[in-house]
Image (cartoon, rainbow, N blue to C red; front, side):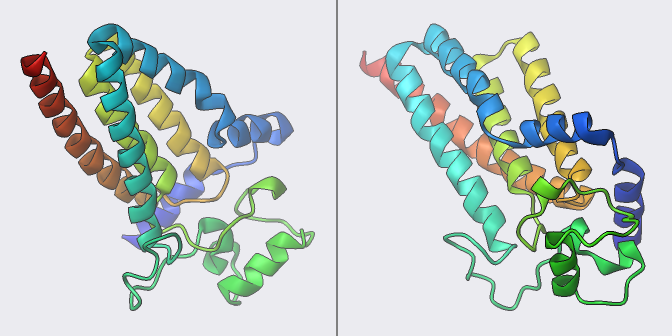
Length: 215
């Protein structure tokens, strides 16, 4: 499985030049997606009113927060990072020596990356993308998928579902391009996000029905 995962990563990761690097760094950031959050809240408000939007916002924040925390369990970081002390997290592609043909530790490779040691790198990583050591479960994948499942179920518009699928795919691919995650990291993150998003959606529908009955 790891061999296939590594091969697929190597096929998808490439040096697209400075312009592509900037695009992918922006996509992986937060600021670019603020208009999307605003659009989602506006659509929920139109569909369910102010009370529905407040319920949605609370559940959205809970789902995104839990997705991030659950992902952190498998990277030994975050609020719940100590829950699996015997679990061995997997280094990010940028810190995987075998991909570079090097017989060194991931920590040593991390030092080389941070110091921008000049060499022909097999894994393309923009200098600004060098980050934490582990990436076993992608928090980016978990959070965007949790949001997508909840928002698509609440808004129920075909065009919006298509938009969220495109956004999710672009964000997930940016993590491969930046050398931060293997494809399987994104699959695990997607599963975590889908489960939490679905749980939040069920809670949202239940609370909306209860609120409508009470009103």
